[in-house]
Length: 347
Ligand SMILES: [Zn+2]
Ligand SMILES: [Zn+2]
Ligand SMILES: [Zn+2]
Image (cartoon, rainbow, N blue to C red):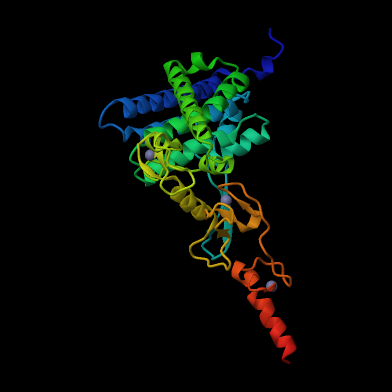
């Protein structure tokens, strides 16, 4: 008799657990099939939505399977994967309030509960790795990108290392054995995406694009299809269009959309840092005094296009940033402090 007999789930518990495992695997496999159809069958690109939905659901089920497999009895397994009994108030016939427990629900634990249980049970996972997939699913459901394939590729690629580790270390299985052909597709997608990424990076490096501009570009997505695969426009590279002018274009590798690299970066930078509904003077994003690109951030005194660092003038009264023209005219105070000073002198 095995010494860890206590850890082996009973037949009934095993039934529930195996069912979750099968559902997890088939959900991921279905999702990968959807992905292949959306990529390879003309007119079926919208299958990308069910690809993202199924793969996301499948990974959550795989987490749930791990949680359930820590149970020794069917009761424990149920308690681990169903929502806990909650207590709700109701009005009695005499107008008082009474609390009654709801029956054990048919609802299984939701996403945030899965995460909390993984943490409290000490199961190692990398939750951040599934976020691109969740965001991709949300984007596909609510927006209408022209080329959804690339966003799925990006999220499968981000998911891949985590899934590989989780299946091997936490489930003690071989990913290829568990997921079959789906795993081969995921592996190829991951490698393909990584190759595209490094190809693009070397293209930017080859034309000496500034390091800081490249690192900001990595956080940006194509406006048309939300792909992060944005490379330098080869035609402009060949024609030696200067990279520090607005004429130099970037091109989305996924959907071929082109636009001025500089204008795209300036727009994305402003969208990230500035709130169009809140007017701050001076504006937090300024033109860089070295490269004249509108990507100088007052808060870290750095230009995020050329990397130039210079301290922005601050009010000698309250330390808040002040307008450049005030300094040019010999001023050292913000409007408010100079008003206060004027009042002080003219009392
Ligand atoms: Zn695109
Ligand atoms: Zn600059
Ligand atoms: Zn001031």
